[in-house]
Length: 267
Picture 1: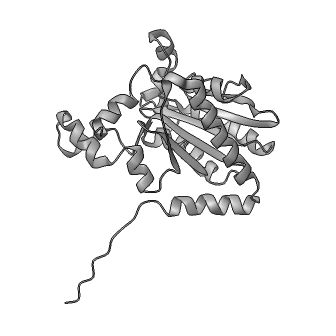
Picture 2: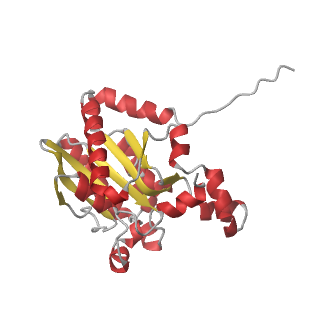
Picture 3: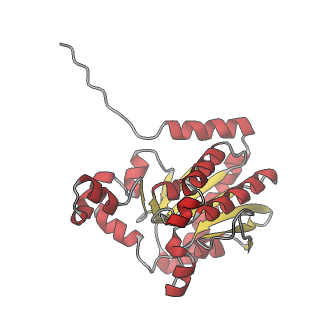
């Protein structure tokens, strides 16, 4: 069985499919949309509208790391800037207006931490996404395809259903950051990864995700067909709910995360 650190390295592998690759295979047809209508476009967020199947339109929002040096530089290695999160929110609100479900594919080390991102309101952009997604009156399904890093991931994973690929990871902070803060030693990354409980198995036990998707990249088409089938099943179930039922279920989903134990002292 792979350790948490080994799964982290697998999740970060450059050979893993990008967000756009999942969109291309899962959506029968689609069109990319650009811009946040405030500042500009962020290539780290690949988003638009398309058809999951005949008669099933949906909005897709995928974090894309790129496939070679040129595309990775263009997409900022999958670290979205504020305009990326605002573009995502614009499309989510559009999806709500036209009663389209929202499908998110998440793979990021975290939101871009540069000075220009902070100047343009990085923290506020992520917070607005989380706030608006909690009240969005249309189904939201998110899939962690690689690394789900901190608020950068949560800004696209505040959803009704969340799934993880079997070797994906999901964490409040990177293991490197955790090791540096707790032990002042970046060499303790493996220990930090284990302590953080970042694996898909951990997330399933804590009820943070609904399911784990078996990876079969040698048969990517077949794997994506299986993912499409699950998405269609979830859309049907969530679309059958009223707006109030959908929002209440989403709220309760987040309320039941994790577990706690209580010790009673009889003395």
